Image (tube, rainbow over all chains, first blue to last red; front, side, top):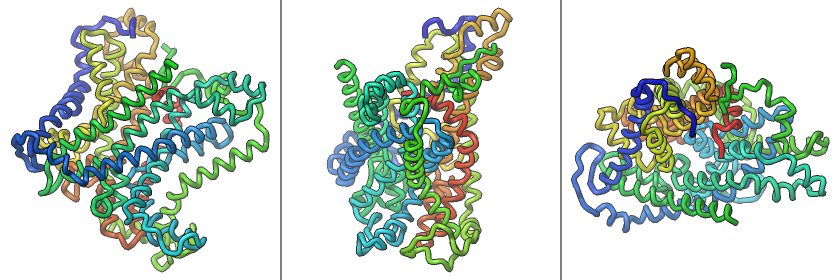
Length: 297
Length: 305
């Protein structure tokens, strides 16, 4: 950064340029962060009001059975998504890296699920996973199952369906990030290894993977955080109800439920937001630590 | 002045096709590629293509299948036997899909416009001008990246409500109109310009505004298009925030409207399919048209690990 920027302007010019963005940052990022903490000690409602209630919301959190399910779901979500979404997109990136004729088409096509709204793809999957949908139809025809599998009404199958949807939708996104990173992996290393008789698999494990290690850790952080923040997939696949007995809610789904209607409670929703914050910070800290350790080793 | 080095749009002409570029990116197989490997690669590509695009095609096919056609058959047919656009008409007759689309478009345009203007102004000032407090401001923008948006969504709603903008489209667009990430992307893009260009312009008597308009902006068009594409897709696809802000059905954006569509027509997948296609096709067209800029921008460092 040093050496950049020149002082050939009036003192207020930079501020005139920065102030719109800074205003947005203060009004829509920093103030809401502080206000979330303040609100969590109140019983604010969707229709105005809100008085100080002390730690009541946090006491309620401790006995909230739905929150316990939501946290369990989040952890399962993260644990399943992590291996699939760190490995598969890397393989895809290696596949589309080579500039074969038509490769741009494939890259764009693989990215399409990312571009589509989560609502759209969840509605598409809802139909595919329907009792009378494509997956059940094909499986029955092949004789794998005798009756339709309740992908959308069983607690665990619903969670699994949402997880598969998230993985499917995320493939292209992480593929692109890996693709950017692969550009920096030296070709001469591959050439040297090939001369030494290393096959594609060995070169992948010993050159490509170490070469994108930093990106891999970044991607793991992105996957963990977005798995913990899941909303649309579970919301749409469960028809907004959070599965049988509300056991397929995510933390964000609970926050959304408390934000609306006569049952709404913005104070409690804010307390849930604080839980969400701490939950998402944990994987970031763990992975950042791993990163530092790996760099030292 | 012709030396532009926007990381998202390097001015080096024809680089991706050049031999230098190929040497840097190709990591498997070398100068030539064996026919066997080629076949294997294309087979894999087509396999993945089926997985990623298949569901969309299936939905498109469902939306076109005639009402008399059995869509529940155990032997699924991809091509409709009695293709028809009836369901598109039925969806638009029963649900104001075009109004929803217009609402989504209004929000997306506001968000794209706000980000292009706000983020490039701030990015330019932070990277090309010197002022007291610059580092602190930059640090603030970086710090907010750690915070997931969902954590503050409730108090953001409270803020928007206090402005009297709850249940308005402007309220949906407002918080996203200048994103911290976009400011940082623009900051990076402007920073890559060589300082000498600024020096020369200053000698010629150009002030900060002129340097912004005539030197800065034209050389970061690549990053601006990446910011614009991301902002558009983000706004068009967003679901949670409009769901919280909007209560009035005629103000719904497409995503919120679609969700109600699925509740209303739960027993007619053809109609839901038609509705999802109406939401899906515009974004695909936007992306397909601009994907050139997007992939270039992303590969050249707009999203670098």
